[in-house]
Image (cartoon, rainbow, N blue to C red):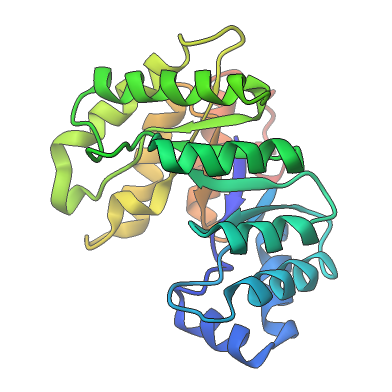
Amino acid sequence: MIVVGERINGQFPQVAKAIDARDSKYIQDLALEQVSGGAHLLDINTGPGRDDAPEAATWLVKTVQDAVDARLCIDSPGLKVQNAGLAACNKEPMINSTTAEAKRMEKFFPLAAEHNAEIVCLTIDEKGIPNSTDGRTELAMLLLATAMDQGISPEKVYLDPVVLPIAAAQNQLLGVCDAITAFRMLNTPAPKTIVGLSNVSSGAEERPLLNRTYLAMLLGRGLDAAIVDPNDVDLMNAVKAAEVLMNRKLYAPSFLRA
């Protein structure tokens, strides 16, 4: 599974303080910890309500790249912030994210093509998040087709069925699993899929248990990537165990250390 580290996010108070103070050490320590924990990419999010968001994105990208040799995922709904972050990236970036709303696809797919970036595509349109697997799959098909029309290779598209909190939408969680299965039928080779995992436990008790159990369920349906906390050891061990059980990785007695 492709692991996208979620912790460099200005929504976390300590990260917001570090961005305000331009505290390079704090941000670089977070980056190093996540890469050491198994992250393949690091999500970069300046947080909400920041007047200096483009400048902050540039600073975050350069600061992280000075510490680790990892690809970055620029996480912002704002075009100016995305442009600033992407322009500073040394390696192939990922854009997080577009929806199936026409106005957003018109902006973000050309941006992905310009920067040769992978892009996360959320199954949300002007009406919101569909309640059915078929509804999510229709939007996934629209996103994939529109990306291809913009010259973006299907291999660079990550379809996200949008995980909702168990405390608010418990009846939607199996539907997300079904959507992962359905998305894989939309193209050959199968499109990549991704989720923001921690959404499932937002507002709930026993968050780590819910996160790792749901991730194992999604991996069983063929999930390719997830935005997670790579320093949650039990979660990462569940990923390693799932990959061995699914015959994606070779079993050895030391598989947890692999």
